[in-house]
Image (cartoon, rainbow, N blue to C red):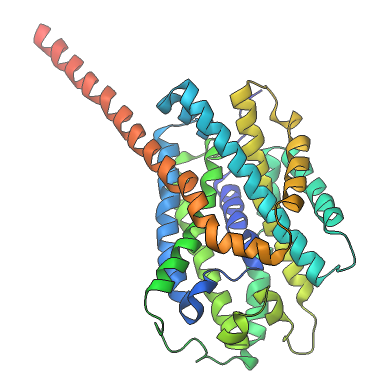
Length: 370
């Protein structure tokens, strides 16, 4: 079976939808309070650089997925062990996004419906899309992801009349400590999570566009996050923002003479489906390459079901989920997102330079013999 291909635009939309993901309902870098905009700029810059590292790894290992790179650079045994850890990370990440979706919908839209039912229904649609392959996922992203920034801008512009544009002042009231901590959190969620795309980058039809696609998607995500922050803090104020569970939802409740809350639901469904779909695809593709299974689609239903069970079982309530995410997630994810990719980048650069040196020596030998 030939390798499927996606266009640069489709990859850009998938990356953008992935980065929006749960951030459409969760205010990023909220730990910095009034200075979250500064944390977003710092974290967005670091996140863009991290995503460019992933792109460089892929370009240094053309047509190879993360699993294949791990096996080649670290040896078959150690590479397979690390690949299994990545499989767990992708599955766990999918379950976290499922839980974000379930908590939001159960809290805001369908409070009487069991969370397991809502997550399971959502999972059926995600698995169906993943079974269609990367091309189908790319086309869906191309069609649906532009809706997210459009709805965000509609709500933001419409709330200008109720804004207090000085609400983010004073700047750096609590120093740089909270800003840097929030920036680290913003790098790991969502930019570092795009490490999953190392399983998709080989499908890009024009590799020379990869770095540009990655950078522009990261910049767009950070820009939209800044727009959302200034909208939310100017409408709610920093004190209320720190108290509510789902900040963008609370902001839409103040929309004059209209109920635009369904727009947030739609954004979450689109972004959540893109993010979970990529995670499940990455996990099942990695399992098939580690275990030698020819068709990854045979695994999607089982992996999707496990993600649903894990999402319900992992945390007792939304406060437990948010507390774990705020205190532990960044340190838990940094090995997968930063340490191992940096090792792979160094090994890829070393392996790339060795053949070049050898070929120069061979050329000199040929010239001497002549």
